[in-house]
Amino acid sequence: MRQHAPQIEIVGNATAVAERAAAHIVARLRNEHAVTLGFATGATMRPVYARLVAATRAGDVSFRAVSSFNLDEFVGVAPQSPGSFHGYMQEHLFGHVDMEAGRARIPDGMAGDIAAEAARYEALIAAAGGIDLLLLGIGANGHIGFNEPGSDFASRTREIKLDEATRIANAGNFPHLASVPERAITMGIATILEARSILLIATGSEKAAALAAAIEGPIGPACPASALRLHDNVHVLCDEAAAAALANRPHNNNRRTA
Ligand code: F6R
Image 1 (cartoon, rainbow, N blue to C red):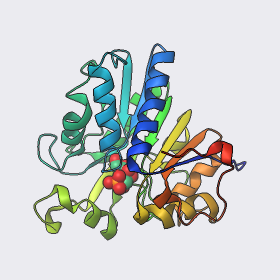
Image 2 (spheres, rainbow, N blue to C red):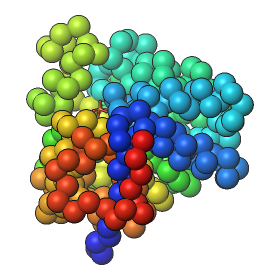
Image 3 (tube, helix red, strand yellow):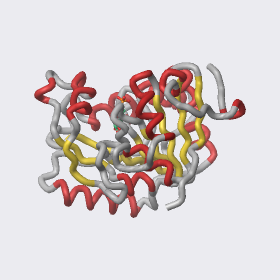
Image 4 (cartoon, rainbow, N blue to C red):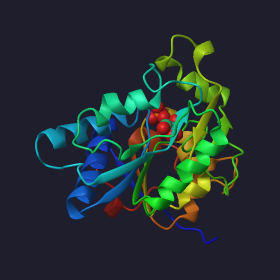
């Protein structure tokens, strides 16, 4: 597969990143009638969703014609229980925007047969005509979705065992570390690479090494996010702290300050 250079935009801080990311999504929703989005959860996305909610409340944007697919969900965590990504999306976005019920899809981590659920999810994405714009965060270990290091670039939606570091990073949403699930269902790397455009968002110094590995390191399963260099329409939006380990800064015309 051919390699591509992602478009990299560095802004001052996490607030500026959230503003730029939300503006990017709002512009897309205003320019196109029906858009299929891919959503990530996590701390990085919270301020982005807060701005999308504010823009919806202000009447600047509407989610009426939006369909969406979330990247992942924990296995064995009920949608209504704290820590689930169903709950996260309801709390931070779906509960506050005018999206049609039934158009917001999240993998079912409670399915009795996760392999069948994964196949069903892939079929739903295909039936929707694919994902137009996929939002991604990045793990400090370089994961995208829950594709942990070692994930095959040909992987599709499937069950995965979470790295200990990922369980620790998610422990804040659970009563204690022991209750963080060991397994999740995640879109695969091949599924992610089929999105027509990708917006990767990274903030904070704890993401600096992973971001540099993704953009400047070897392309391979040791850094799942490095697979994004096989995609021709990736926009990386990060703050100065997350960009700190990049050897090659983007040219000035690509760079904005807060
Ligand atoms: C979550 C997901 C993960 C997160 C990543 C960063 O749905 O797919 O890849 O985007 O772990 O998480 P935060 O933003 O909490 O650092």
